[in-house]
Length: 570
Image 1: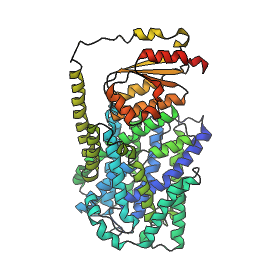
Image 2: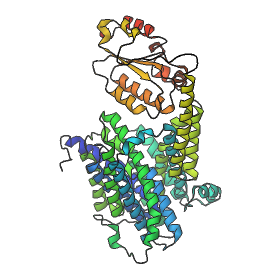
Image 3: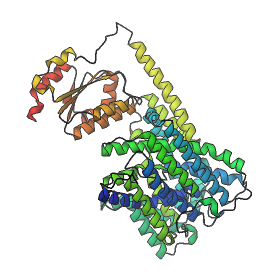
Image 4: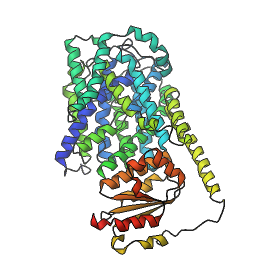
């Protein structure tokens, strides 16, 4: 209770309830997706089992990750990337047939979630959270886009009322043949869901479009007498209990199950940590606060371990739900607790109504989620960014979709590091050609800065950037830009010593400049080297973000501009 802050009670209640409303259809959809690989032909009530697992995971993570985490406004629950790994594990366990039962699947999922939680707690204790910043943007872009494609492909079959193959390759290869056997009613319900999700925000954004689509299309399905095999089915109601208390555990090969769940647990922990801390950064940018990375990992680990014990899906910090929480007034960890309690209330009182929700409606919701995960901006800039970044992005994308998620990130990191080391080495070697090295003392103003008029010096902040701006250096850059005093009217970025800028550095600089401009601060740039200038102009940061008249070839020209545009006169 000491960790809960009641000073923003009204905003936290509204933010938590709104986030809970957004989380409800997603929790159901992710649960169905994870267990949907089994198929209703094998387990008739698998839809209800998946829905219950999704809701349980959302409320356990929502409450306990909020209480023990390090990002006050974070909303946690099942997410697309985590659900893809969970579905892969479930399909692998089901395929072994040792024994082939839903109890074996649930115990395996429980063990994987517990291992995930344990590993995340260890990550937090060992202070590994700070190293997430070293993952370059192309790796994250390719990985998240691959996850989005997997989610979309996996939902094509449920959208048509068909059983989906397990492997992505089989899904794609069998699609032309299976399409001729589609069921019209599920397809129409799923298509209507997608249409509502994209068109309803044109009417109002105050009500979550996913919830509107879920309710409207479920009512339509009810009046059209949608067959039971195309719906979730009745889910058990009541307070969640540890899943092993109501199972027959005789005949379980515990040694095999432990071996099969440790690596997926580690994969879930790694992916969940990345997903969560990226969401924490997004929350920081909105609230202008700073999260505690290691405490956040410990909170996520506690939430995932408890989720596994009670039969829920593992999850992570959810970006969309967190943003909705903040925009709706949530400011403390109490909002996350309220979000979880709302889902518990749904589980206690509305479980009988959930059974009418069609599987194709949840498939339509997930398709829109998958589309939202794909990094279209990264693809749009694919032919403008350095070739090395493009190679990394495409490699990680293909490995994610067709091989393995953890292998994709690992190989992507190796490729990115090797290519960066080569580029950095080439730049260092080239600096020795044609002359000696000039030494600059950062503590002493440079000679050309003496030309600034005394009356405007106190309102100008000069930031001298040294060396490449890349994925490993952008955190400190963000911190420096965030700490610019409120009295400052103009920020001058001296770019003379920046010889290289990668995609991560470019997006970080663009974000920092926009934040400064939102504060009413004018940003000027001087002596931009050829490679950074190429990146800034090709991707339209200049002139769309920084006008061309605010870019100068010398500091003297910048000083002359300031003489004619005194910030005191603004």
